Length: 296
Image (cartoon, rainbow, N blue to C red):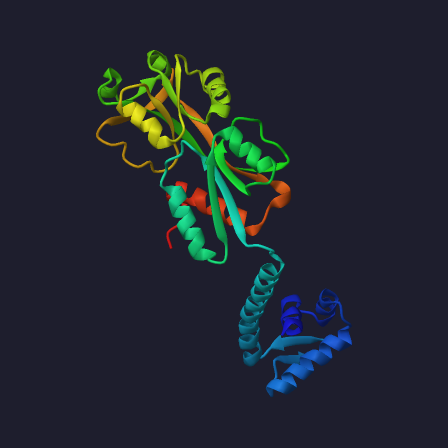
């Protein structure tokens, strides 16, 4: 079937023989053997030219589809045989609360039920270290460094930044809030003790958040501080966020007259690229941008 498909695709026995790395006489004998086995003429030969018979046209279309299935079967069998342990280890930011990650994990598990997914969260620096030392395969995080050639830097979205503020704070009546308006309120960051200085330095020196800082170990604890009107919690507006609740206002943060934007990416080590990582990153990006997915 491969020899026959090559002859028809190349429209030449000579070119097909070169493509298949056999002699012209050998490929001609194979086609004759195929016709004898089927009991029908596939190629009508005239001197050095040939045309497809109706049976040959049908056989060519069908055998191409069969050969593609065979290639897929071989490729999947090899993948299953060479993977020592089918797993995907994902790291995401502690302050992330979008719904798309749950959707991506559920859909990926449906498509690849043989893969065990392990998920951890952390600060940007914690995720970076986990990736550097091979403890995770893929991290979903904001960009804080220049892109490195040692990693695949898969850009997911340009996302805004929101401030979650108590409804009892005067700023809660606004449609948006500016960085200078937030200086009187403590900034609540989600970070363990060892990462607090690094997180504060980034928000203070790079993003321009002034004022004092409070810290929480997790997102729920941070939101309880907001409900108690202790300060504001900066949240990346990545994808679809769950409702803030009746006690919290979620306002977009502006830097001057422009919204404060962050670059949100999937990162993985270039040398460890595999189909699972690429499939999950692409799935997650498509969920973040459903408007770019063509209608089925």
